[in-house]
Image 1 (cartoon, rainbow, N blue to C red):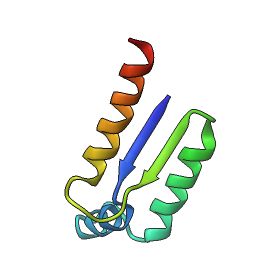
Image 2: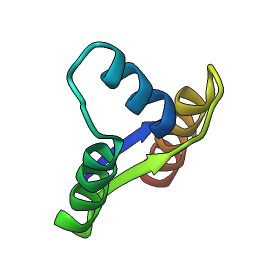
Image 3: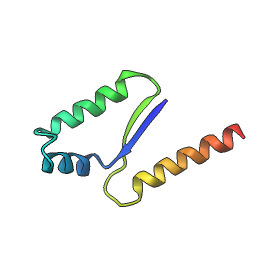
Image 4: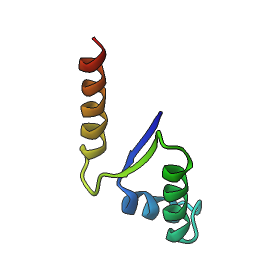
Length: 69
């Protein structure tokens, strides 16, 4: 199981600024490929906001901790 939580627009902008991405469609294509690669892989766009990815990850951790404890 793998879950990536990110502000995809912000991620694309940062990658373009540092030169690791030339075309934002490449990041989108990667996200779709990652999600479609395996049923247990998710690439989640959490939108803009400082704590949104953290909140999403913490919620997932709490869900699984409560489920298996």
